[in-house]
Length: 86
Image (cartoon, rainbow, N blue to C red; front, side):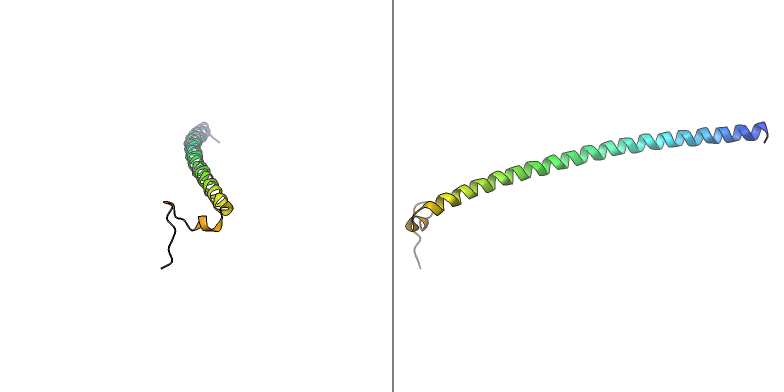
């Protein structure tokens, strides 16, 4: 192998090495961006679940209070009107 051929191989190797380093940097940056997006979505979902859990807790409490009321109290609407059978 001549000195020119060796130099050509070394040059090509350096080019490929540089290309791979650039690809690594690109993919690591992209991975970090995806990680941030996933964390944001996760936080949004967790917030919604906590809100829904609190809402369900409120509804459960209301149902428990209603269950403990006498039967005639259950027939009253929110304004206190007795529901009439029509």
